[in-house]
Image (cartoon, rainbow, N blue to C red; front, side):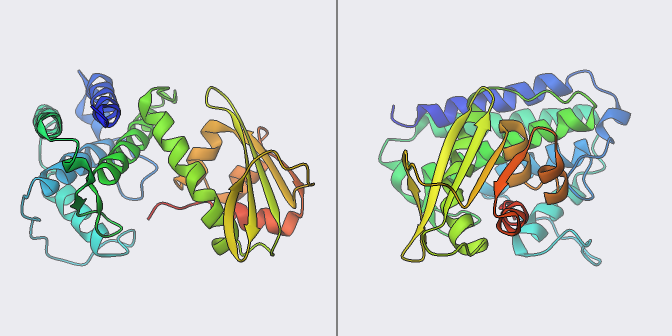
Length: 270
């Protein structure tokens, strides 16, 4: 089917997450991640809670002030599911995770190709179902890497999820360059990524809009070379702009002021 690749990516990412956490201790589950205020336990409960929410579960009632990292209504929903499930044991957390993600996969395998094109709720508003589920891959795969990092086992899972993450972030670069960085008209950005999914990406501002362009010989206003792993981590806000620019694997040429603005603007996840 046309969208089996999304189902495969979800299944692969969630299966890897379950394997990574199998046999872990309560202390491992309490390890802090790069997500402000969230432990490994909280990250798993967030993924579970999101799948429950998408299946129609009621958002838990939480009283008291929201922590500083909660910035909007979506953050409140996420936090409500996380807080309401913190009392669960390791075994309960994993069982609920497997059950919720398994139910999602079973549902997706039953829907028709046409259903994938129907409008669905998403954090960005109504979007086709395939875009929502692609976003679920992005969220789940990045959180899998958060778990690896929290457990001091930082090794990126080079699977289907990584391909979706890098492709999605590449597609955001025209908007970042033209709108968030506000690069001048005609400015060319070249981003060179090194690694398994390495590529060279060129974006130019044309009529005030960022456009992906191919094989221009013009000298770029900014040329940024870095590792794939650093690229997605900055786009996901897992490292700050200073650490990204200052990393030994990152090389910047051209307009330094624009490059600094680019590094600051690359964090695109809410």
